[in-house]
Image (cartoon, rainbow, N blue to C red):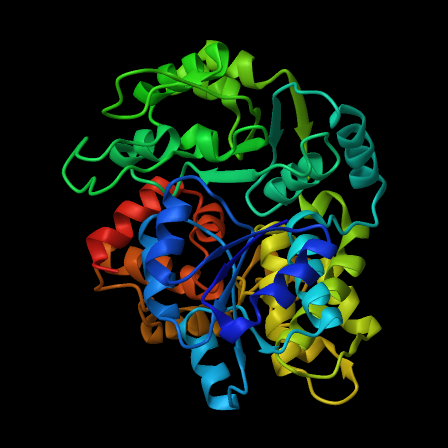
Length: 451
C-alpha cells in the first residue's frame, strides 16, 4: 500500500505516517496539490491520497481525471465540521478522516482500500478452480491473459494475482486500453518528455515506468490500435521503452497481465490484433465464466454488495429474503457481476423493513412474453366462424401503429443508448456489452450526441 499525504496537517503528519507505516504502508508527503501532482506525474504512484480538507480537492480530482490517474482520495482535517467533510466528499473524496489520527480508524481505511482492490468473492466450484490456478501461477513472472465477458471481474482477478505474487509489495498499475484515445495511448504507456508534443507541458513518466518492479495490467487489450501493438510487443520482448520525445531507451522490470472480452484468435484472423503479440501475452490463460454460468456466486456476491453499500450510505444492513434471492438466480445477468453490483446498490436504497425483498430487486424491463392463446377446438381451427371473422376485421381496423412508427432510426438508437447507460449508472463498458457494440463505438456515439 502506497500512501501520499498532501498538506501539513498542523503537525499531525508524523502521527498519521507512523500509523500507516506500522500497517505496512509506504508513505510519502507533499506540502500542496501542485507538489503532489508533480510527484504523481513523475511516477511516484500511490494507492491512496490523504488530503488535508482545506486543500483544493476538487481541483486535484479534476487534474487527476484529465491525466487518467485513478487513485482514491480521503480528506482529513482537525476539528473540521460536518459541512466541510460533506463538501470534500462532493468534491471527489471517497471518505473523511478526522484528526488527530486514530490508529484503528486509519487502519480501517487502509484495510478497506486494500481489500477492495483484490478481494474475490465467490461460492461456486468454477471460481474456486480459477482461483486455485491463479494462486499456482502467481509466483512466476509469466504473462497472463485473463478472458471473459465484460463485468465478470477480470481486473479483480488480476489484482488477486498480483497480491499473491512476489511483487505484491510493489506497484500494481492498470491501464484501460478502451478508455484512452489512440493518439494519447503511446504517451500513457511510455511517457513523454517536456515539449514532445503540443500540450506536453512537463515530463511525464508512463505506466511502464510507474509499474517498474511491479505488475502492469493492460485492460481490454483488444481495443488497442494495431499500430501501437508493435511498440508494445518490442517493450515486452526487450524489457525497455522509449519515452515520446526521449533520446535513449529506459530499462523496465515488470510483469504483464492483460484482459480481453473478445476472442483474440478471431481478432488475429480479422487482422485487428497481432498474432505475435497474442502469443507473447497468452503464456497462461485464465478464463472467467459468466455469472449466469456460476449461479452459486450470486448469494455471496449479493450479500457482499449489500454490506458494502449499506455501510457507504449509512444504512442498516439487511438480509435478502428467499423470494429476492430466487429472483436474482432466475435472471440471466448480461452485465455479469458489475450489473449485480449496480442492482444491489439500488436494492439497498429502495428496500423497506428488515429484509431486502423481491420488490426492491429492480431488474431491467424485458420484452413482454406473448400470452399463450387458448387452445382451439378442431372445429374452430378448421372453419373460423363468422363472429371470429368479424372480430379479426374489427381488431385490424382499430389496431394502432407501434410507438416507434414515425421516428428516425437515429432517434430510436440514441434513446436506446442513453436508457442503457442510465440503467448501468453511467458505466460505459457494461452498457456497450449489453448493447452488443464495442466501447469504441459507444464512445463515438456519445461524442456525436455531445455527451
